[in-house]
Length: 196
Length: 196
Image (cartoon, rainbow over all chains, first blue to last red; front, side, top):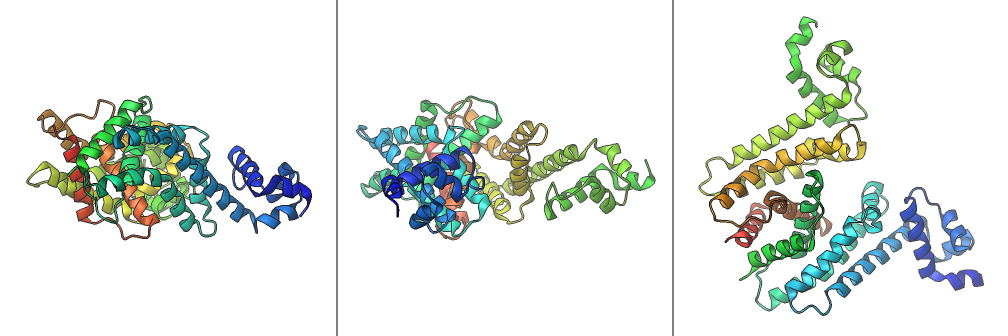
């Protein structure tokens, strides 16, 4: 391993690879492109990642972890659980509605690529994105405020599913995009519907 | 127009075209393929439809109309509005989870194809599929049983969005698919959440 590789490191490679995948696409970017952008040899890249597929998986994982960190940060310091959900979901919708939202374009691509163990990958991604929302519901169910929708049904999936469908419906109807009041309304409906 | 074309007619052509598009894909089927399967000349086909794109649009419209008819039929004779929603959504989930569900594969394809006025087409499709569910909510809102989620927010989109997200989440977690009890639970939550 050259000193150059040591200086850029695994994290730096992932950041540069993410930029390239976002600007172009998974298929349009080669290991050589990434190595060149990092200023290292192909061999140096292979020292960290056995192939482009495993590098892509790592990029997706890192991106999902960042998204859930941002959602948790957005919800921090809110006075109650519903307000925390609204703040986290405003962040979620903001990230989801960006035209170049890397995570969402990656997920679409990953779905079409059928590379490697994508089923496991998609599961991890989805669960990582839903985790901050799930935690709020888990607390409220444990406290006896809300009833459980059944062990196999995720309240976070219900909530994000409502928002995704509203966004799609609004886009189809040429309405403007979701505002905070729509997110508040959606959280209110689900919360009231699950109250004991 | 030959007597052959007259005998098969517009409706017959659409049915045969739908079979072909479902078996293969939009791009893999030519006007010549459809004409041959119908036993007519290309010219006879162009008498009814200016091009393959307009034929595909008609197939999508007819398919969406059939789906909403089937949903309305499933809900007929139910003793109350919630039971009607559950029956219609069981039909919806059944149709959506069929691996070869024509409408859903068509919609996916239509999204990628970017042909013609697909935005208008997708809007019509979505609204046609949601219409039977929307009608039940409209009645309940007009009767003062439920509150409106706002003029730009569709209760039918909220409900189908919840179900789609549950299906995706279950598939990611290797859980079995949705049962009637899950659909009932989802309808219960949304209904209670919207009650005045």
